[in-house]
Amino acid sequence: MRIKNYHIHVDENIDREEQIIPSMILQPIVENAVNHGLFHKNENGTIVVSFEALVSNGIKVTVEDDGIGINRSMEMNRKSIRNNKSTSSTVSQQRFELWKQNKNWNIDYSIVDKGTIGKGTGTLVTLIFNQPEHL
Image (cartoon, rainbow, N blue to C red; front, side, top):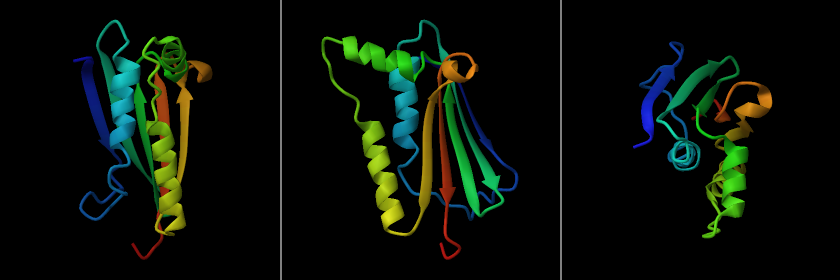
């Protein structure tokens, strides 16, 4: 196993019993962090999942790893003999669009190689869940 540590931080302003986010949204993102970020790292790594309450009736969720980074991972995939393309990012984006079309959620999504923003190695995924009042 390549995960040495994992941390889950939940903002104290989030009611853990009442707050909901769409199901199965975070699973493929965390899986990508393990399979593409930490798997190719020479030593064990860390994943941090944070939930932050937003003033605008939303939640900011970040999934951060200290793996090899998305840019290096994509380069390795391009050079791979197997050439099996990861489709989970595309599937996640399609899922976000379906939630938006259903008018239940508006989900903003970004993924950044931490090396490009001067924060070491790894990948940072940020999701902003803006949910309607009626949910």
